[in-house]
Length: 161
Image 1 (spheres, rainbow, N blue to C red):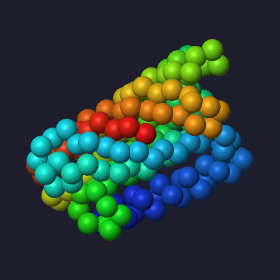
Image 2: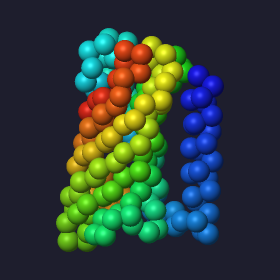
Image 3: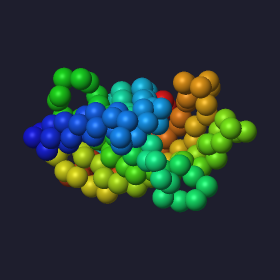
């Protein structure tokens, strides 16, 4: 649990630094709230459906031409109590098709997932999905998260934000 606390504190610090004008414009930040359904039965038996909070911070220079790069940090949990049953995906992502003429986009990302279900472990993960801009400040996304095995539990899930 100490590792997860350190990770969460680090993510908050990065978000704080990202708000300074010298590093990144705050217009490049977005926040998500949603629900998640674990795909693995063993994980779902422990966590059930999960709530999710997330943040994206755009990177000023894209890693791939024709797309936008961004970091994402999420928390998927069964409750806010801190009990076992939490995932923390931390990914670097590419967003494709997010241009003025189109309101829809897709994204792919890779990174690590800190899983605290049966035991705490860090595994590799990937995420992808589709989104649509509903207004200049509102969006909707469907995501798929895939992860490695962490003591019999996987963070593999689908989410709606």
